[in-house]
Image (cartoon, rainbow, N blue to C red; front, top):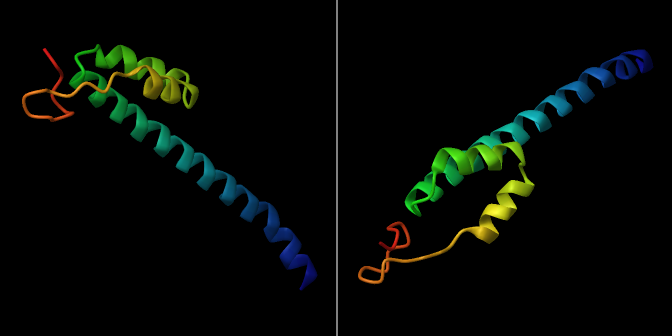
Length: 84
């Protein structure tokens, strides 16, 4: 019985590492897509900003959150419409 438990441990460890990697990639992809849409709404080049964030993730995401301007359309108060 002891041998069966010990032999299964590397497989469980590999599965856990794979799940962590998949979760990390999913979060990175989701936030990069969000940054693309957010930068497009703000009138900035979405592809460039998304590329930079993806290449420097997660630091790039934090930098984008600091650098981005949260301008609202003064007529409607809608944060999804850039001020023109």
